[in-house]
Length: 227
Image (cartoon, rainbow, N blue to C red; front, side, top):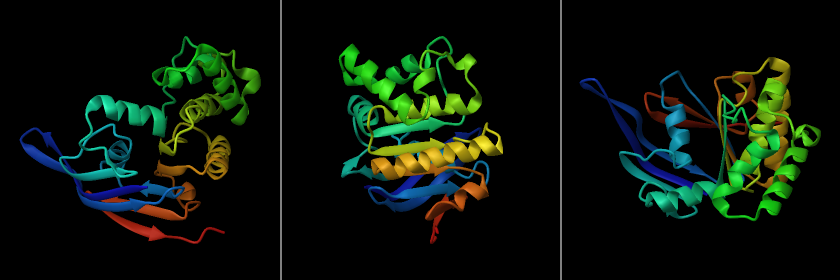
């Protein structure tokens, strides 16, 4: 479970100080699903980075299962990210010279697994996203939707408790967008993940049971009944 209390993030912009987050209090239960929305520059990605331990708050606490990500030494924080948190980004972030299989295996490198186990788990992850027959292809030989599926497999291959997605369909057409969202929602349900996604797409946001809207660094929560 995530528990955020008083999370503030300040940046220097020239002579000015900008508050990307301003005293955010937020609880995300295990297995919960939350969409983050708001205007450009409103703090959406900053909040996701706090949840993923990719940035630290200027003030406040970011607890994941009772561990404060804001104060962990960098080595321990890296380990938490490697073991507990999977990331999916808008730009796929695949290594262009590696095959789909090899790209997925890179997520397992920090865990110290044997090569045979890395290969087996990566192959299984690619099957789970419908790309078992394309594991030998490099990103340039795959469509945008297929590349994002590889990115999803890479995020899930380490069997994380949390999946964080930053505009995961932003580079995709409408049909492929819906395919990727169906995939992510299915994997969320099957694996009991805590799933948090940033999106500007209102149609996708309406599919979530809980929406956090950020404006000027402040968060408001709306609960929805999803039928």
